[in-house]
Length: 300
Image: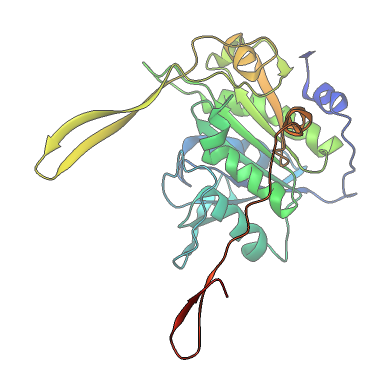
């Protein structure tokens, strides 16, 4: 389905919602590249320049790419006021993107909740299976888990010679935000939006399903050996082949790829097949039960 504007994306998804009359739409902007990343600044700036929006930045203090949906649970999480980003109030949080979002929504902004969480713009694409490990996408997913609609934006790169144009990418991102502001999102759904690297020749918007093609390379390779240790480095390359109708194919074809993702991971196609599995109850077990006098008796 070719979508020439983000408004038609909303219509195609049968979204419903309404704006609060007379009130700026409050957007919490987060990312995984860190609060000083240029992609976050570009996205915040394009939104803050529109009086229809009020922007608050809550972002990781440091780079948190490829952290997936990890949470910080075994230590205290520091939060610090940050210099304004694009003229907007900003907070830096010492945690993963998912932690940042949950802390922002349940603590920092609990008395001033946002209408929407927008994550990005990430330095590098997060299409297809990349959504599983992406901190950018995890931030949007976490917002929906808390009950706030969310979008994730990523900019495709030429990894041999990366020259990201985040300002141009932000111009392509804003119509999607505008459309969601006007129409809302279905409950439990968030949008994973990937913008082509050649931002000056984008063909438009295309609604697509999440690609599941495996990466051409996804492994760890040995780097060096030392006494008592062996060192490895991660290697990754996107899929060589992509399927029609997927966000992978749309992105490679020059479209802004918009994939609606959901919280329900059930594979409904498999339910009927799995009904055929032959499952038997475990055999009765005679437990070993200690008596009060310390003598162990079998099968009591």
